[in-house]
Image (tube, rainbow, N blue to C red; front, side):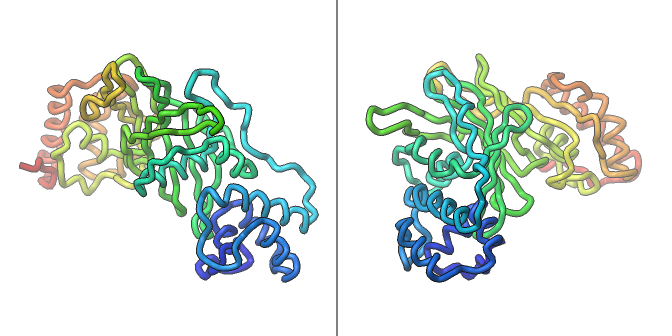
Length: 342
């Protein structure tokens, strides 16, 4: 936490502190601001005295300067963890990108800003924020949103036939929730301008953690395979989107029981050529169907055996047969709530 309430941030300096995880910690350690130190630091780091939050590109020079000033004032001599600069692939159009830069780029996309994005400059602007290597090749870094802790992580998924780089991304905007998605990046080096992203495209929009959160994405010969986490309700509705009345089965963002894998079809020109297609379902070793309710019992008896073993392909006819068996089981035990929408 900062030494002041971030919901009352007024000055550019305060907005900068509340939007950076390292500055939040350093400011909290300081506890109060020596006016002479604050005035000279704001001036030396080129921070306006008044106004709103500085723009993203302006903060790439202001924030590292502030971090250095805080550390000097607090007598912190240990080196910063820094970014993982060595994690750079050799293929054309791919390379290290700080997770915070991915977040900024996606925010630009949502706002309709399609300007070239200087990756090298952004990496330098966030080099004080540690990047952690997670399981299965994910890179993660903490972030801050108005004083609340957040994070962003991404994983390299490969390259499309048209040369665009693909990455899976998970983002938390503060709190427990996180949203997953898959993106294509057209990344080129421009002489004299540094490494820049020229365009991006959302290829797959996932959900929140167990409700469709993205676990992995891989480019293959026929498109992009996207694995997402699912709940019992999500698994049944992946097999039959018309199902309703599944109120006795878990469907919370922390109720993962398995994985659904979809193929996003991509043509030889690199363009998405259709909607995602379900290609397999699998169950986790640790799974909870929601106790001993009728729906949980019927799920264990009719659905579990059909999908055990990750990678087992389920064709549409077979999936509808599994759903029919589940519905018949619930009705035989007096539960008439599970229905298909007309």
